[in-house]
Image 1 (tube, rainbow, N blue to C red):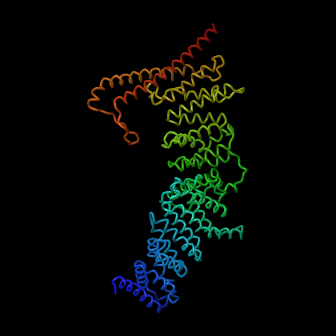
Image 2: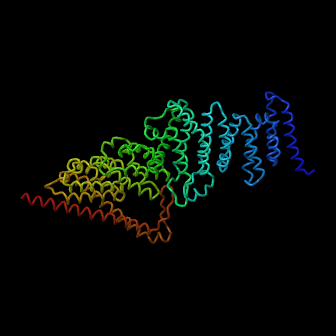
Image 3: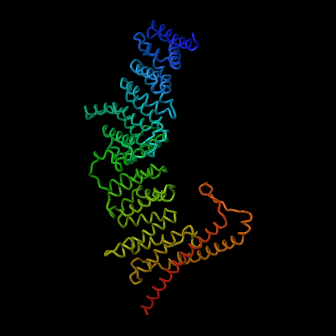
Amino acid sequence: MPEEQSQTTMAVDELQAIIQRCQILEESDFRGEDFNLFQVAGQKCLEDGYAAQLLEVIQNEKNKVIIKNMGWNLISPLVRCILAYKQEDDKQEHCLKILDQLVQLCNPKELFLGLLEQIEQTSGEQVCPTVMLLLQPLQTVLLKLQNKKAYSVGLSLAMIMNQLTPLPVPYTKQQIQEDKLGLCRCCNAVVDFAKPFVNEVVKNMEKSSEYNNMELKEELLKFCMKSLKYPLLTAQLEQLEGIEEHPFRHFATEIIDILQDIRELMPLVFLHHKGRRSYWENQEFEDIERKNSADSLACLSYLMFVQHFGINCFPMVFSPSYLLQCNMTHIEVLLNRTEESMLSKGLDLFESCLLRMEDNSLSHQYLEFRDFINVPQDLVKVMTLCPIEHLRKKSLNMLQLFIDKFDAEGKYTLFRCLLKTSNHAGVQGYIIQKIKDQIHLSLTKAHDNVWFTGHHLISLLDLVLFLPEGAETDLLQNSDRIMASLNLLRYLVIKDCESDNQTGVWTILAKIEKNFLKPLHVGLNMSKAHYEAEIKNKKENRREANKSNTVCSLTVSEEKMPAMTTEMQLQVLHSALFTFDLIESVLARVEELIEVKVKAVMAENI
């Protein structure tokens, strides 16, 4: 007899010996040693490729009591073998039949724990295959459970989602189509797994309007909230050409349907600000749950108001301003993230809310809400810090759209806030340009706008027409702001006659000269002298630098940039001088216009 056949015979014989010994015992007489011997022998049969013989043992009616008590011990080796065999392999088919038999015969409570243990122990590329293999058996076992069913369903869903969460979510069209780790298929399989329990809740709610068994409903709600955070918050949910049924859009539809079926969709959309009961005594755990809940609710609002999932049950009675107010918290949550998928969702949700509104229709009183101040500041951060160009551009567009929706006092208040909180010269220059546009509208309209003329405007100009550090201000760093301020002042001097003085600029002319024009003159002279001396020094040392091949290195955000040659350094210095010349020419023109206007008034008074 060959050695291989001998080893196999030994494994099967050992199993048969244990089975025969246990057949004569009462169920209550099974010992721990019997369980261990059964597991070892069964595992050896599986690993040696003799699943068919093991299947015969399990299907034998005489062994029903033994399998009921001991069969769950085979789950671990059985799962390993099923995943190891190829799909067409007869051995895998035998293993799948064994699994089905165990589900039918084993003690549900013990089998439940065995299945859950396998899901918990899997990792990496094996997560989705393992979960998808065990979902149907797990569902069957849960439906058999009589006690603690809601707890067991919740534990199963939580365990599954915890195992899936570390996996990267496919984002591009190619990644979604490949579904390398099987996450797309797995997520939708999990929804199918949950459906019988959703139906149970719905059935009980239909029986009684005062449905009191809230435990199962609460567990399903937790699952939906986790699903909104992962994978839906991270997923690309736009319709993609070439993908007939987008797996994550399908998953989102299913999650929204579950929330609607268990009557939690509208409460989540509108009543979340009242807060849900906390289950944690530990403050740290409570804070984590609150953050996770905020992410999930933000994703839910995006699904409803941007992608229009569940919009058919949405009551069309709310004003656009109220919907904006409800969503500002969610927009703030999304804009404070750095991931492209979440930032884009925040910008899309903001855009969707703003486009529902008429220009100039949003009351300044909304700026009393913290979110209405925080969101534009978050937009500025995205505009200036985000490395993704299309998100920076969209943030700028959303800031402009947000400004457009406010009434005059709201625009005024928002401009003051942004000028005080933004330290970015480009953003400050942009805001000053918008102030100029509002002043122009005020001066050209038939009716006066008190917020961009007179004493209100004077207060705003105090924030614009000054140098933060006087003559020592870094003019190159602040060039965008300075140029915008000079252009605004030039406009005011040209458009507003001293005799009318609608803007009040002539009232504060002396202050403007003291705080802005004179320090700017001094600063320009100092800066130009410094850069001209630097250019002269570079030119004198060019020959020595070339001989020694000396170069200048530059580091930005801990990343070393390409080395700068002397020629490149000179180019940068000349560019700075050109900026100073440009500022100086506009400054000269402003002073010339002021002088002409002042002389004209003096001539009239003589």
